[in-house]
Length: 378
Ligand SMILES: [Zn+2]
Image 1 (cartoon, rainbow, N blue to C red):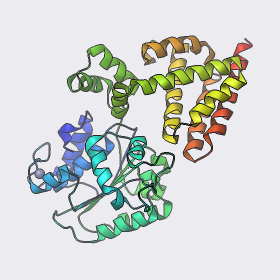
Image 2 (image 1 turned 45 degrees about the horizontal axis):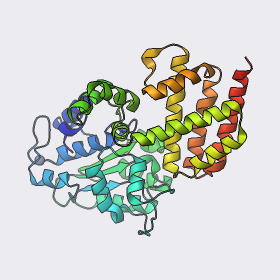
Image 3 (image 1 turned 90 degrees about the horizontal axis):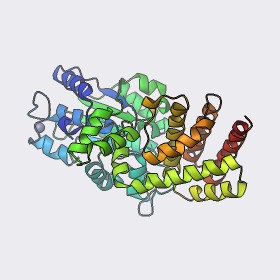
Image 4 (image 1 turned 30 degrees about the vertical axis):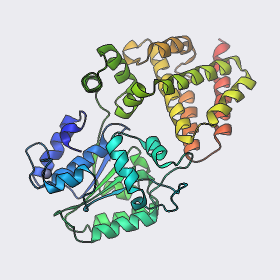
């Protein structure tokens, strides 16, 4: 990954490049921010720039022996840790067992998120994690001499999924780092990383991609017309992965919209059998899709509130979503919006923690029915 191939984030790239050029690169970094913003790509680009044998003013050379190996993610001094779990074909929770899939994932879906990663290794309903054994292995690798480069780099993707014991091991390593070693933690949930570990790292917030930048990429690289690009950029709100999915799988979002609309209508009418039917169907999706559905719902509620308070500049919706939310907005108020959001967030957390989606979603829906009943009274 070269800096110039990363979408937007110009001031961050500039800052990172200057840091390397001035030899001020700290040995441990935490890149945090929303999904689809390019955090992992930036970490790989910095590591590559540090290791490049013919570093340019603003990017790696792309042709030296280090760059050639970085390009394929096979440089022997570049190590990755990422969440895995046992699958049908693999009985271990060690990242080395998944390297082939990981390199394909980085190549084919560089902005891919956890859901796509899990899908690509066939995890279905299981959650991945970075095991203590994995942390032990990677700290061992970093304690060895570099093979080819003058530097060794370890990148922990979704570092918040590291077990605490592994985190403590890594903390020790960061406190007494082996020479010429760089560690990058990449996370969407930095609050779930051990605070001691977090505070030992240089923290760098990577924001979502700006709408105008996203729009340009969608027209220039993907050939969308301006209006469609603007619409997708708005819904994707800074997440390139989401923008790609909106382009490639509009039916997925259509499905979520249909289900959310049906669910809210049934809740409004307090039709319990319909509510059960819909939540059962949603619970039959894999966990990642259930969570994506809930995130999607959260987005719609947010837009509904903006519409309720007549702040059209905050409303980022497709035409059909707009029609639904226009009908629904009167029922989303400053009084109940917090509860709607809390219920959706709580359900997503419960599903993440392996609770039974059937009960979680039904509970949530019954609370929605209750909230909407109160609105009907007025
Ligand atoms: Zn190079």
